[in-house]
Image 1 (cartoon, one colour):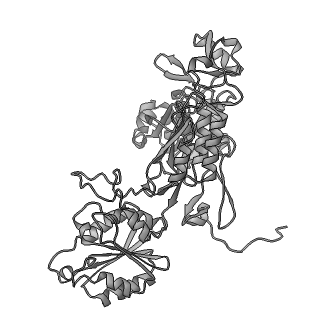
Image 2 (cartoon, rainbow over the protein chains, first blue to last red; image 1 turned 120 degrees about the vertical axis):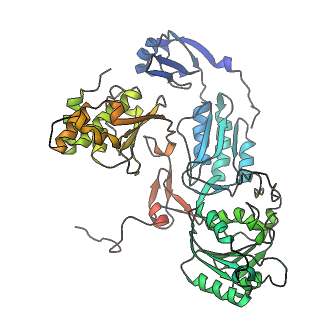
Image 3 (tube, chains in turn orange, blue; image 1 turned 60 degrees about the vertical axis):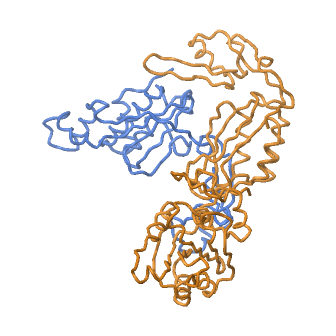
Length: 356
Length: 205
């Protein structure tokens, strides 16, 4: 990572050459051009290999000598190196800009989806001398164009050996970064609770759920409000599963009071697998169940109060077609405690960013 | 270094290339000339400059052909990018310097044609003349922008290839989609723009 196996000082590689003898060499620094009222910026970038056709331009800019880099066969300029690194790191749904700066490149998502990071492989990559890469967390939702990682070749000139070693790690574990596109796009919602069903209080869950779904372009096809009646809830669940729906959300009835029957209803609806309880707060009483690949997610009532709960953590994973299990729910523990900040900045915080 | 041809020569060539002379040709030629000037390219079709330019067009109408004609950008060379926004706008990017300008054709310019070409009853002819005469700032809205052209969109050979796990098509340049853990082409992932009528054509001849 930060140490170089063969540290060589920058100035050892610099050589001053007359412009007319510079063809084929690499510029050691940017060359700025100023055309009054028209243009100011680098006309030639550091690392640019001087061509015959550049000579007149350089002379017009007043250059008679240049600092150039002496690269051995087993050495690679940082900007060339980082292009190779980025190409090896970027899996499906991930790309990068074509112009490295100072040996750095940012990787970005080419479409919206769930970022997948092979964390152990990324650690191994970072153990290679002279390269580094830092990223967002695994399993976070990313938008199209969002920067998901940055990588760089650290010295101005990197040894071919170190570069090849890093490329080998990235290729062996490919894809280190990928984006899973969202595949579940139609939801149905069952709001449970005698107090809402009987009109004693007004439902506020539908608006909360709808807003969270809209963030991902998911359509809420239908909402029903039901009393705490396990049989009726199970019946509606079965009906929803048979309709044009990708997943069902239930709200309320997730705790251990005698009237909390939603969990029993989900079991009675004929699901094959059910995982109750997540190691995260708020939202510990969350439930995930599956009938085949069809998910049902039960949100406890705390989601009415807290702006962010386990539901926000699990939703993008469900939308990306994943089927989190009890281990995934347990793994949320580190980073699973919401700091309840005055202004919620989720997902730009530690909540739900379990080490993978 | 050469220089761009004069406006009337460019317009004539553009109209021939496009198939007819229309107000869109005038707007497109002017947009291209202005865009190239702003990013410091005075002869974009010349061998020295042709690889420095990428143009993003936001509409597939007459002006687009004029922009392509004047600048020499081409879809097949990956120097012409079509972003289907339905907006009469184009962004000119100098890949070498990173300078980029987005130019939008002002809708309000339509209401001012009578002022710049008075006394002409034929609206088509009036637009042709007025769009020639209008100052740039009446005809266009111009903004300097940053466009980080991603590596998979740059001209040059394909650097990335994937194989669709469903139909077997080779997908180049990062256009694949990871869906449910499978690499798919866009048609298999999101649906195609076509409908299959027969399974496959046999013995076309």
